[in-house]
Amino acid sequence: MRNKGVAVLGMAVLAGSLIASSAGAQTQLAQTQLASAMPAPERDVLVFTERGGQLSPTATSAVRGVAAEARSSRVRLVGRPENLAAVKSALEKAGVPAKAISVERDASAGLPRPGDGVNQPADRRVEIKW
Image 1 (cartoon, rainbow, N blue to C red):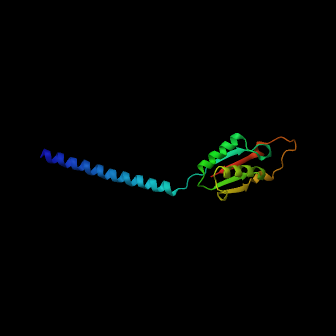
Image 2 (cartoon, rainbow, N blue to C red; image 1 turned 45 degrees about the vertical axis):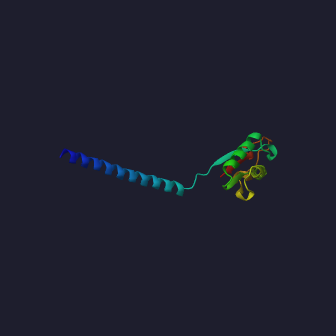
């Protein structure tokens, strides 16, 4: 009688672990499907051009890093028109196809610049989004 109880208990433990294993696999599958259905979050980097729209070594390095990550993605540039050309050119040189790059004028680009000749960082920024 005791052996039957042990056998029944053993079968119950085995059945319970099989059910739990199956439920865990289904949960993992559902999580994988959900993750693949959700779009990846947009990434962005902010770079600043020098006077005249040139890129500093630091900005050039940042643009190359973006290009390495975004080769197969669409890249969107947002900034003042005089700064966008240098960043777009650097992205193309780093391997991002020109047709994958879109350029948008910054909404604040129409704001007047200070008359004191001070170089404002906000006037030199370019947002790179991918």
